[in-house]
Length: 545
Image 1 (spheres, rainbow, N blue to C red):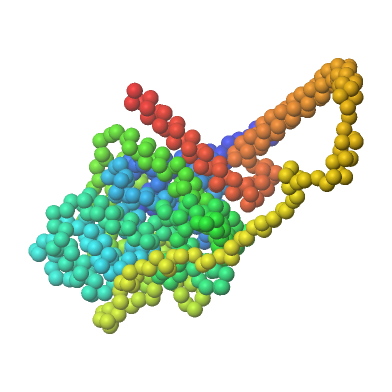
Image 2 (spheres, rainbow, N blue to C red; image 1 turned 180 degrees about the vertical axis):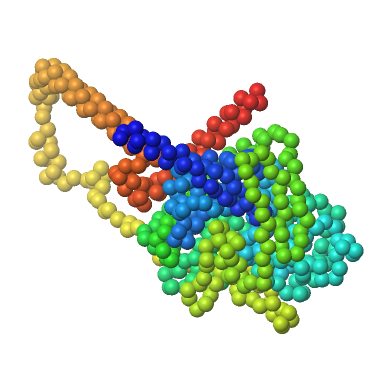
């Protein structure tokens, strides 16, 4: 019976699962993994498949059976995280947007970030003015179809491509004009680089909106960018908080708290309510990870590690852009198995339908406003019906910095206690007090006698008492040190066992507590990434030498 159980256990461990990962160019990568395979193993397979070395900016996203988004954790089992029936479907996406994408070392990395931001533009996550929208779309055209050619590009050719959820004929003409007159001669790499430089200047660059409500019940969207925490309502950015001003992130049930410390020691607590406890926990996890990446030394060390890459640039094959929005492809490195597929669909959809589209279901949570019909983006109709209507981009008026100023909080005043005391050192005494002091003052002979008695007492009793006190203090200190050492060892052992995959009810209960989750994402993960960066730096130095 024991051998039967062992054989059954080994078969369950050796079971293989099929995984399909949708890439940024809409192709799909399919592989098989073991039951106990960690997220890091699958991520390394993808990076090897894409010939990607600057991998710290990317991640794997999936949706659980309850339609809640998650980022795949690299230290945990893939099968246990997904909690769904195979075959598994996930998405390869940019998780941490580079603060300066144009400064990335390799062109393949810039190209993948370009594809991600192009998706953000199409799905309505990247808001911009009409002029900026036309320029970004023209860069995409130049990168993917090349220079304007009258023989290949008849009048109205830009209308056959979809860059935004909806746009007008006027915007299409502006896109074609910029592409025809201003971008001629630019290579795909140059156009993509200019696209990235323009995109990073927009307020919603790197925004992945989380739907919430504020304390007044108004719909809002929270997001984390390379520069700080953002709150959006409608198509306006109402709050922007730099990462160095965020002191704490906390969640309780559906409630998310953001602790902010601004100038003049003003402390603010922003409170928002997520749709579900799971959504609130996901929001908190994203905030903790983004703060650790951008506000610490991780982002800087990632850039320093990228600067040390020395290899021949991998070749990138960009397929020409065709109507119905077919995405370009990448030349991939060696892989286990890959099933590329280009998916085409109609693009005349509303902005929110773009966010909810099934083709990007593993990337975007369905988002709908719950108050007065407001949404993350403004409702805009095509101007083919009415030439005076606006296009599906943010309004042309300039953004006012006053819109992002936090409300003035109630100042936390500290009570200043004014202690008035008598200045004894400088006070004069009365005549009676002087007489009493003179009467109570001992004479010189009395003082000498008292001094002799005290010296005798000290010589007879001070040394043994001092030795006893010293021994007692040393024993107490020794006991404290031993106790603290044992507690430290037990704490390390508990952390190691809790962070492991040991499936025991006691450790499962600990892992599910908010305190452990906060420790895991706020301290353990950044420390692990810091050690990994250091190890990679040392290995690269050894290889160079």
